[in-house]
Amino acid sequence: MNVTIIHIGGTEKLCSFESFDAPRPWIRLRYPNGGGVWSFALAHGGIEAKRGTMPEWRISDADLATLRAEAKALDIKFTVVPFARSQRVKPGAPRKKTPQKQMGLFEK
Image (cartoon, rainbow, N blue to C red):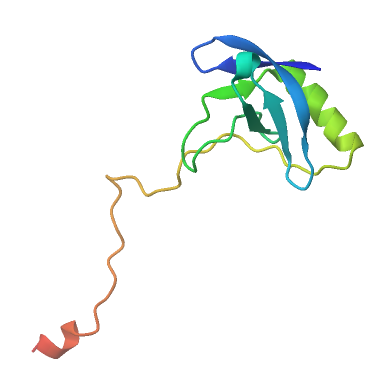
């Protein structure tokens, strides 16, 4: 089975489907011309990426729907979640000040 993947910039590649990563909700695709085998998430269709970063490649919507249907038939569980950047506090947000125990010792 051939699967189309799309880059953030709009470039498309045709990859071949390898297998499902059985306990994990991921699929493995083989890149053309010896580019290796990479894992893509069934939840959002993105390629494996570091935590807090956006994946550069994603599976096309039509192919992702087909792969999700096959995964459900094989009883592979996954939840559909949108892409999320890191959950850090914004730099301009006011910080909550913690009370310090020793301040009471120096007040009169």
